[in-house]
Image (tube, rainbow, N blue to C red):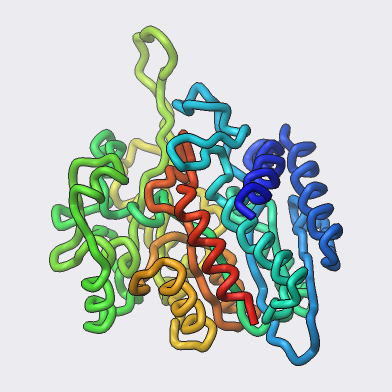
Length: 410
């Protein structure tokens, strides 16, 4: 099945389904058509839903009314990529080197969701599928899924399920935000004021609604192995910045963070200009936790901006696509089944950890569909998601297939 997986993944990846740039609209359509054909040719009922930004593909295979139904989420859109950014091969041509598959989307998220698609197709043919299955694969995750709430609210029946499975990873600011040093913080006096010397956010009342970290939660993270040298290798940094008495996992998953993700000012092209720039802008990413209300946090931050800037500075303040954090309860039969399948597939003890990575779909499923969720990323930790040479370790591909087969089999 590995050869079939690589063949189909290569085809899907060749569609440059970049949602952050409208000039790739035809590539988005190509990726959707490819996916639709794959599902149709294997006996799925397929709905391609328009009207919610890029098309959303919902593909269903129903065994019987007695079987439980699993809703599987994925996304076909990808981040931009150019070989000049440091790629060792064409980012939209699947390439194998040193037992790894390299391409944009090989992890985020085409490669991961395709594991489940092909596993389920194989189980259908062998009459070994345990669950009814519904895939919901969207095309705007990389732009924040702004239309997804409306789609889910108006399509509850179409998406009806007993539980959800998500194999998507967030290895950028979701796992390292708030723990790694950020050079932009050092370049701006205002930005430097956001954090105090103990790496705590210095905005008044910011932590008012943050849950107190329980002894159980701290103990959960103590069980997860952490090596500072491995952290430095994967993150590419030389330091670990956490609040007092917090370890890495607690910091990035149970504590909120503010990440400066971009700054624009002055002349940045070749050569020099003897100017005094009159305008600068910053893009700031908020990682909130359960019970922090996004609109209240935005109000607190705007007040912080007003208080921090000199009176002779004028400014504009915009907030885009706020959504609430979520804390899932892993105490359900589907998580237990996944844990057993993972331990069998990886021949190792399965540990739980909270994650600071924001996936709007997790919050939406929790609040709207109100069904249990299994969030099981299948990627290698050093997959370079969103960066140059995004890769999927073939050993993890094999283990991911093994897990998917075990989980979805009778």
